[in-house]
Picture: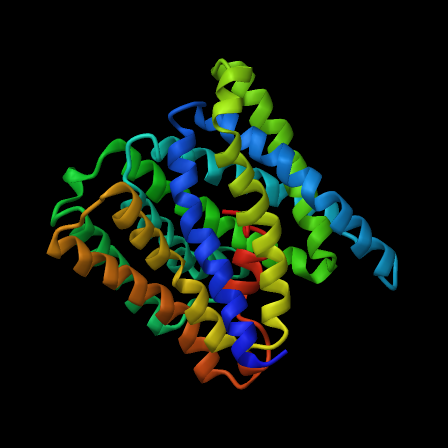
Length: 310
């Protein structure tokens, strides 16, 4: 496969991730956020099970130690992140949700710092400043103007970042498909249990949201995951990171076209700053580190391979 074809595949994956916000928003008219998360986990698990089985059959050795532990930890982080994001989408706009979720890219190296005790480089702090200022502008120049939903989506970025760090640790055990499957099984169980405890799931609601759930669980998760795996074999890390970042742009464009959402000029400046911070965190390491030029970027391989997900 040529680099150009691989780039188009990854761009398609980014579009699938960005469009997922529309379906996540639409589903909130029919089911509760926990019901959506649980149903998504069930369907994604069914789709990933044969792929994980195929991966196990092709694996040269036995399952690596720590895979189950890290998979469960990743599943917990995913449940918290997805639950907050879905709850926030009840009131937050798709445009704001897309850019606020992107904050996880900047938060990832900070959480990794807490785990590994390795301080982030100076450009990471620049990205933090840019994203904080961008978030302030996205709210119209005041954090007070954010809705409760906006705050929940922003909070979900912390747990998405934690999921990235956990996935990075799990990568040492190999078997990315098995990791993702185990995580989604936990999402299915925990999400469904919480839905029956705090919501009132109904067959009618699930039927009404069936298309939304199917899109997020199958296209935005399983299909996009496979596109990602193929594309990363043929793309330099810098190219892959920039292409993957267009997810937020696709979300904003989709919200503009299909929902008629509009951002004021100040909001677009803030959105651009958040996107710039996201690209900065991903691209600069690849440009400065010779090793990074030949290895897939951490944000793309871990943040997407197992979140692929969003």
